[in-house]
Length: 374
Image (cartoon, rainbow, N blue to C red):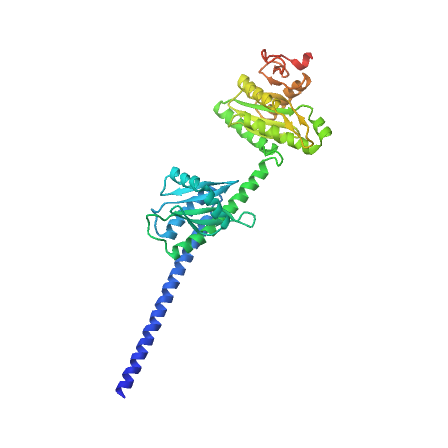
């Protein structure tokens, strides 16, 4: 009887130990899950706090260090930019080294991103950042593996879930950037729109007055543009407008602001310029546009020219309306004087007195009151 009781007690003890072991395993699993949920909650909260792409990249890489439980392991974030994959942020690695990795494995990175699965490449683990049905992968979190302890399954799972959060953050940042761009850019040409021009001109004028700087406004108008629409159709006219906008943007300085003023007119804000400096910028644009040879949708080729009026900040011209009105007067003079020329309003006694850079007499470049005498 005693032996039976002893055997029964041993069985009960083994059963209790098994139950305790099972509970301990469950508790450990729950602790891991709680830690993971806490990690994801913190990451989500931080990523929801910003729509700036650079800040998102910094947060993702910071959270990746927590996910892999190793802050010194090299890691970086790559994102799509058009048809390319570019570096967005780095941690514990030199920027040049990370860029070289991307360049060396560009084709493989693109292939792995299209596949959308976590993969190893050149001593690194790539965790794709999911996008939407139009763009399955927005980029990838890249973590070094060579020379480091293998990542645990838990660490990889945390990275995959972090990448999903990063995808939502980057998608929201893109949507914001697109909405901002849509509000300040011309849908057809991609140049800034008139609303942006007015706001930016007011800001630049305040800055010029405060710091005593120079500022010019240039109005460009395509010559005889209506004939292109009438003879070749509005789609061909749109093609010409886009080509002219691209030519102006490529010709002016990096600090200049190119906008579509309306119709076939473009306006350029040129900080730090007036007088001959402004004339030279406008003249370069006029020559660049005049050199275009455009093939239209019906197969025909056309050339285009522009007329330009320029005004700049003076004692009597210091508000946005005054700058635009003065530049517009000069543009009308350029049109009346034969088109394909630049007319600038110099600080003269009469508001209409101008100085023109003529297309046919560029060596002289000066024609006072050309429109008035024509």
